[in-house]
Image (cartoon, rainbow, N blue to C red):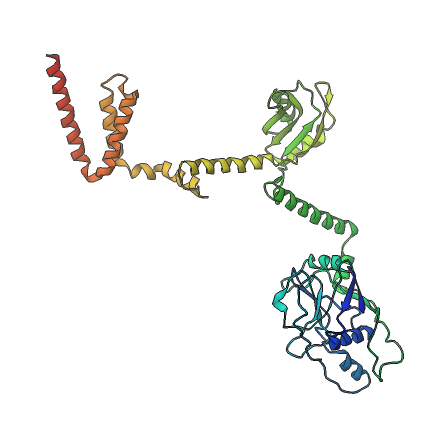
Length: 426
């Protein structure tokens, strides 16, 4: 026993569990025959969880609606039918979306993935979507864009329902004629937005969305440094060059449109031969646009060139790779990763902060320079470098308060070595 739901994104067939959940199945079938689900919204879509259908405004059961048509009263809800052998173990499980125990009316949901065991024992399952009869439509619903409250931006509706087989007998007060089908609803908000836009604008938005999706895909594959990366609007791509055309030749020709930042003819990295195309980057956008207009199909070195705006982001790749290599070198040396303000801090140090903190060491270095000039060539020797580095380390270890004593000991050692040399010469 099955029911067909014809939605705006495709058809869904629901096989009902008539023997295990008879009250829920009968309620659902009678609501379909009363056209209660025609034009009903799939009003909530929670990705990889469930989609909810029908009833936020009038979530009452079929018996209540039928009694209301006859001017009678009847309970608004039906009782739960929770069975341990009916589980949310596959895509397309259909169950009543009850607002509380025993409050099952019109609203139901369909699971959008396998194994939603969290809902087991809480709601009345009454059917399943068979594989191949709507699971592809459920995947489309699962991928729609929703707002913060999980309402789809583009409304999805059930256009009409069809009961393929009804095993339940109609009540005695069932209407003799089939209820009329309501007129198809055209979502005003969506239709108004489309009417206000020109066809070209709609096409442009669609193209931009497609380009954005492709950019994200290229970023995931590693072909783009960033999905938001954009080529420079000041750079031209020039192709069909003659093999003999050099960088300086192109720079001389294109410089008449404005200052050029770089001009590079791309060459084979093994042979060094020209690959007959180049990139020319101007300092201003206006100069780049003027060169594009004026240099199209111009003959250079007996070859008619083609000019276009560059779409290359290789320079951005070079910057990223350079930063990555620098970080690897710093990590290999055991240094901390660079922070975003390291360059500013280093400039501040060069402006005087670092050297002001080392005035004592600076005095020692001046003393070392005066002493080393007395020996020709000794300053450049490895031995001198090693001794002076060792002395500096000792000075830092002693601290600024011990510098005077340290220099006194050095002068005493030098006098002792001088006396020893004089004794040997005698």
